[in-house]
Amino acid sequence: MFAELLPHAQTAFPPESAVTSRLASFLGYSGNYAAVRILFRRITEARTQAQGAEHPETLTARANLAHWTPRQGVKSA
Image (cartoon, rainbow, N blue to C red; front, side, top):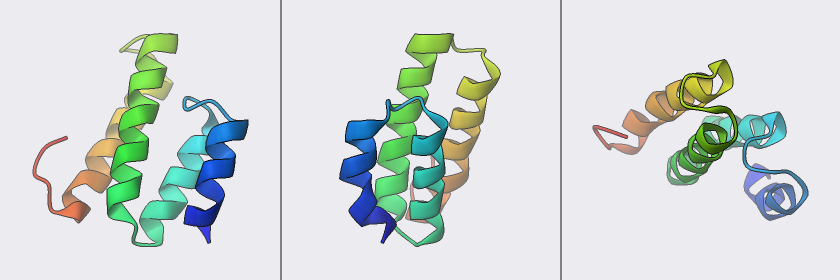
């Protein structure tokens, strides 16, 4: 279900938005690890550009990327 919402969310919300981050987490909890990793990488890059590398929301996005990466079988983000 969340994967079906992804194209609409990407059109309606910027990648650094909280909505995009929540959708990414829902995808992860649904088992779509490849999509969640790609999405959190985009979120991290967008937040780094918009807010800086040390902003709390950027750091949260990096932590989320690190959380979901091993679940796909990848050892580093």
